[in-house]
Amino acid sequence: MIFANGDKIITYQEDASVIKNIKAQYDKNGLHIENPYIGEVAFTKNTVSFYYDPVVVMENENTIEPASYIISIVEPVLDSVSGGK
View (cartoon, rainbow, N blue to C red):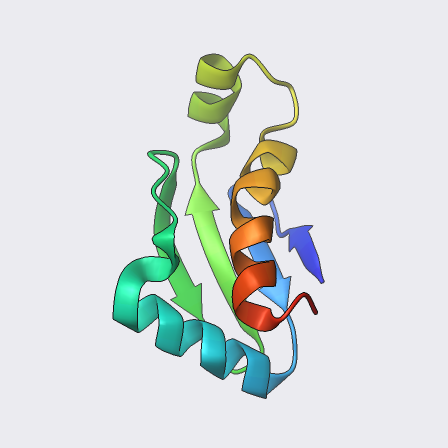
């Protein structure tokens, strides 16, 4: 499950084994997420969170839904690494 976690964070929550695999891929090659809006990436046992600046996304992408824009960037990458879970 991926969701907006407050105003500046997108969080993907899944089983610990899936997050462990995502973390391994992230450590190996950064998950191939090359987007100027995504800053820090943080992992816990069952989550991976992506930090971003919503105002910058809104201004540069002309959107009122910055979380949806960031989700559209990270979701395909997470799906490919997690096996579509």
